[in-house]
Image 1 (tube, rainbow, N blue to C red):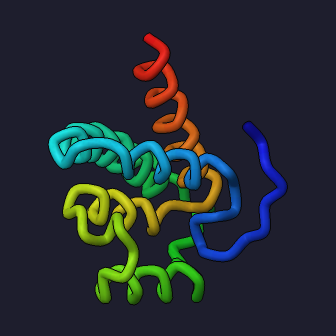
Image 2 (image 1 turned 90 degrees about the vertical axis):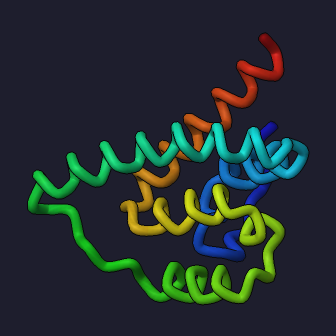
Length: 116
């Protein structure tokens, strides 16, 4: 399900995030909490590993800072889900490649759950 993509927001550089958000929007708040708990564990491991590597830049970038600002305004549906909001806030500090890997992992897990 690959689409032509125009980057609109800091998290839209790959289709994984859009796919994940579309599926998450259909799930219960209980599922949001369960998924968030596991995803944040993965993000924490990535952050720990990145701290041990000196070459990883710590800058968020303007797009991500603006995304975090908008998160505080709770204008997007997932900003109103505390667990999902926390996932995106926590993941926003990851390097883009790590962020996309996390989104890809969530997407594949959700697909496997749906098909399994």
